[in-house]
Length: 182
Image (cartoon, rainbow, N blue to C red):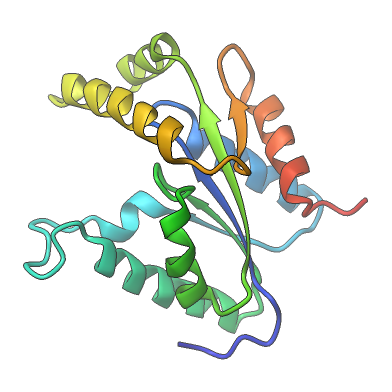
């Protein structure tokens, strides 16, 4: 791990498939860039995309953490101290350790759970999924929505995305993290 001269901050965007995590992350990034606020964006799903899973890491959590640690070290080396990270389950309490190990002790973590109804996410996923896995993605999204609803801590900010524009949702997220100059 690298040296951490300044306290790091992580904004974790979680939520079921089709809720708008990636779209909102890029809009948050646009708002931050517009205000001259330095940050890095990492799509967490890509940190563990290996098939087959390593024999000793069937959940791919260890490879995800090693990849995040390496990527963050590169960003920190050039002075970045803010990370915008998207991943379905990144907002769960057990993710804290991964970010503390990857980004350094004392990392300030803000968790935001984006929410949407089954009907909204079905419409979004049907519009974007072109391959053979739509039915599987719909079922997984519904299952993860229930799991997140049950397991996310009470202090996690829940931001609904149903019937709202990406810029409106991103504005709520940016306000929650407090990274824009006042």
